[in-house]
Image (cartoon, rainbow, N blue to C red; front, side, top):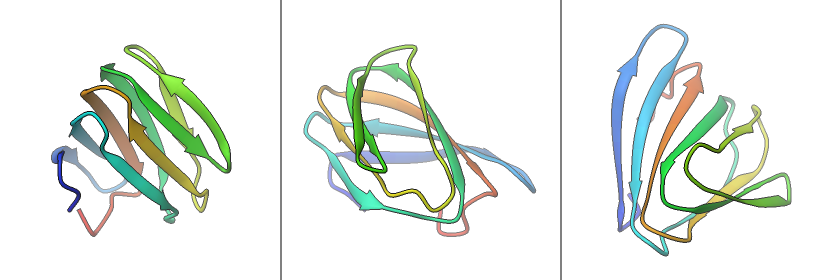
Length: 93
């Protein structure tokens, strides 16, 4: 696990999983890829998301998508809360 990051699975079904991530300022989720489609919504704070080499800063009410197999990473520019969905559900969570 990454220091300063708390992950909670809110609900998981056969085809979809929803998780809440609480990130302290400065927390970095390194570049990675997985076979799951991922879509996220920023509840509070500010994060920088990079998907396939393209970065954007997101704040409350903003959302993003990382398709299956896409390299993506995140940096918490402020303490933030993000809700992510994964399809299919992640076995490692």
